[in-house]
Image 1 (spheres, rainbow, N blue to C red):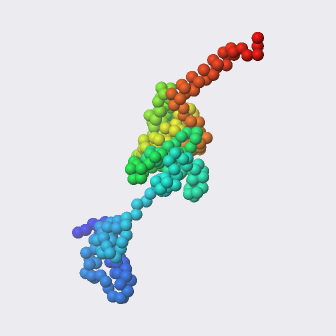
Image 2: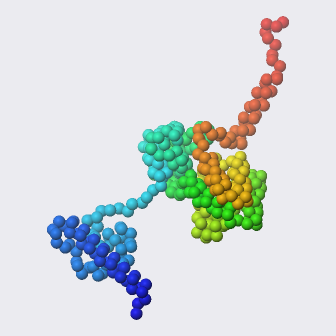
Length: 333
């Protein structure tokens, strides 16, 4: 004898079979325009429940001839990818000449009807693919690209969207940590902060300490799903887009600001103030987002070491020339 759960499941599946059969029956009648059934009524009992939960494309292939439904699979694309593909097409068609500077991010955003952060992500994707070159303090320039010969298009998560997602999630987790964390756990946050300081002092990217800080706050929730979400979102830092963006905007100075912001989060958690902790984390991640979206054209360019040495040498020569005695004038006897 079937258990009640199995009986209910069996009835549900049977109901779905008949609903799907009548839907196909009605569709075939409308398509044929004859008012007569265009399906085999004996087919209904053979329409299994598994066919109902297949993707639409598979269901159409198994029940309707391909010539009656010429549908192609739709693949959703991220907004920055759509922007990048459009700009890439313009470059390949010669609308932007090799070596020319692209319009500013603000101008592109207005022309495309999108946000500046989305344009920033698109341009960084094109830089990773070798289509453009980002020159800090100057702008975005077109590189010599052979159509169809460039790198495989980047399709990872957008770093700026990732930061916004983290802001929504981790702000509430910080508030929860202020309610739940004990002294030992708060001490663990201070250890993570100290590790960040040591990494910066050693000239390293302090991502180990940074990651540990954010994961320990998530652990206070005692929710494995939330911990995994925070971990996965943080580890998006290692995708090519995020790494390229960081190469332009992450410096010892920017990380020092992040450390100060972390300290404010710890202080609010230690004071067991959920509102203050929520605000401190939201402020930290909002400022992180802003540090990645400052204007490329107005940003201070990173001077290569050799160029810096040449500049210093020219400065020294100029100083020597300034103090060198000038030659006597011809008019002086």
